[in-house]
Length: 628
Image 1 (cartoon, rainbow, N blue to C red):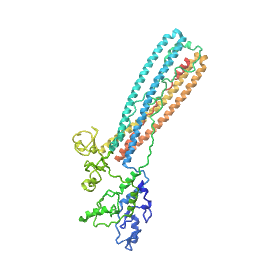
Image 2: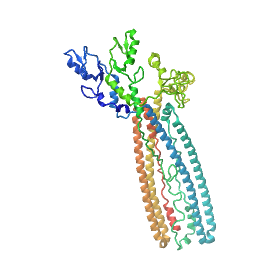
Image 3: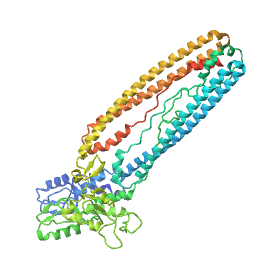
Image 4: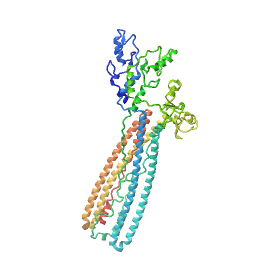
């Protein structure tokens, strides 16, 4: 921070032990030492009955009573933590704002993914039409050779293909409608997130942040296997003798087996193009040194005048004030003949003799040099949305520095002073300036709302709980924590169930692998039976088909094993989350529990990966080879 860079480390060094001050004390001459060091020094001088300062050699007739200098202790401790990661409440709110923005940014790519899904579905319709056209073309070519015997039969097949095509188109259009509904819901969620992100109410942001969650995806589309070529199989069987006559073989099957066959579709129906992948960018910014210097300066404020210490003096209780301010305070108490500290209220029978604290004076000079120029008090008539002091009169109202929840009034620095001086006002709750003071006060009873009605889902005061909300489900903070504990346990049970589901999926994949082998064997046996009549013409072709079957079998087997490994990783991750939830349930601190609850609940909402797969139609490959 800018303020600290002007202060040398030697400023905090004890001149006796040459280390950083430990339990710093200020002696009457104004110099500072470790409490142990100065006591040890004076213990050595006790025989002389003359106690002196090791630096200026100022003699003291009586051994002073040493009290820890609280301000120096805070400064030394703050210096030790200079390089630590310490942020203010405002910075924390900013961090949560960025996290909220991340949630909002997630919605945008998902909307784009849905759009891509729509395009993919349209492409699927076009591909279906192309497949049907190729099938019809193949049927037409066959009709030229089979003459009038196949005309009636092929017309029936065409009609069946067109009917099935229409049914598939209607189904895909229905799926398109569902995707459009999903897009509407996502856009609605994105708008709500944007509105919440633009909100300037910090309490509202933090309150809604913990319960904020992205709406889950709808049910995934199931994989479907569709092949129009199988519809021609009966015709091929009827005309087998004519089809096996020598003819030029097509270089490519006009009716590919990939039409809706063995298609692995993700949750977005994009054929594996993406599976809920989000990218995050880290926006690094230079630290606001002026703001940090201001936070440091607040530690050095005089609690009487609320300004940087001028000619700082440390009184016997260890607190420090401007010499003018503390003298003026004690002048007002002179009639009582009882002098006290304005902060801790410790009383002194005699008025202490105060001297300038040399170390604090040096620190104040360094802060004044590094601090940015003081801005004039804001004029609330300007365009910026500042909260004005409610007590200032005239056209130029001063910007408020605090708002009182009991008085329901915002105060400038001058009008706020009674809340620091008057005993009854000191108990009032002061917060940062806000225009929405009434939001924290019950409109019916003018009481601070400290309870929550679950029935009406709104904040209420105690009087509301026994009047308008009598008989409703109202809870305190402790009861709410218990409820969240139950929710946490429910999440834990859900994770256990999901682990079981993953294991069942692994078993299903194993069975699927066996089905692939069995289907391949059946296809090979079927091809062997078909080769019995066509051995002289298609022996070479069937050898190639067997090789293709085995190659595709190996590819599908590797795919299943890949999914098994991926499932295992997800099961391990779920177990790890389960362990984290167990650890969270053992936390006794309510605040720590509520802080960690939202992050744990969000990380537990992982997206499911599509693991459904179907074995390839090996029999269809053999039939296609026979047709060729």
